[in-house]
Length: 313
Image (cartoon, rainbow, N blue to C red):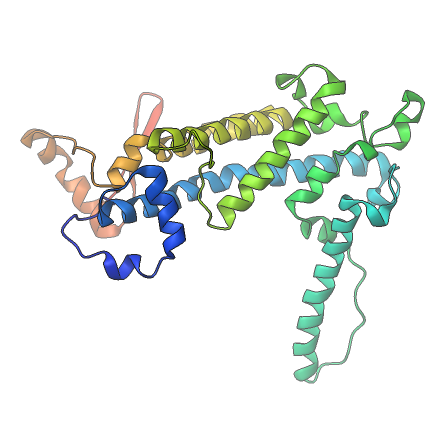
């Protein structure tokens, strides 16, 4: 970024599937190969900016539920909480079993290697709480919010995860809805949306939402910004201090900067260069050279903000 205009991109574009590129061309109204490939590269950078937001949501949700449930029901808490469905028909319990199976399959692969190396056969280990939890996927922690894990009568609250644990798992749920009877449904819907979006981002699908009214760069990027806002809202509902820490780390600002028309135009080679005077260039020259020679980002502080300088191409 930005990419040269007078370059033959045809051999490169030929290596990317036509249906995938057609999606980019249709959404962003591209007029040249350099523009099309620039948008393709921009989308990869945008996806990388979204990754820490999605990863923090997934991990914080998992650990928040697990910590609170373990405190109430013990280490293997899923064996003790009540559920209004048969466990073999419940998606949460299926995911727990799937996590155990995944651990066993990975162990079996390692065991085959050990046996080929002449090592003595071992028994399949009993998987620990931490190993099982770490092997679960995002959907597990979406499914645990289902109504079957919520007490229908207050007298049964002690036996079910919800609603008793809601305010401890989602410390600031009131930022979404103060009504505890309604907020779990809203949280479930938001998490389902973010889980679907996470799969799109992680599986290299277009990161904007496809809809009839998404027909240009502004509307496509608008759908990405909306996802960032929802991620911010969900993380803040789980733990406001985590949200503040991520904001201080610049993760949300970075995502919003990359997922913008201005940043897109840089990758399309359609953004005007920042004009510097000769005096300004002289002041910065040694820093330019140092950054380029070491391929590093140089940082400095201005008032309470930090800035970075590095070579982009």
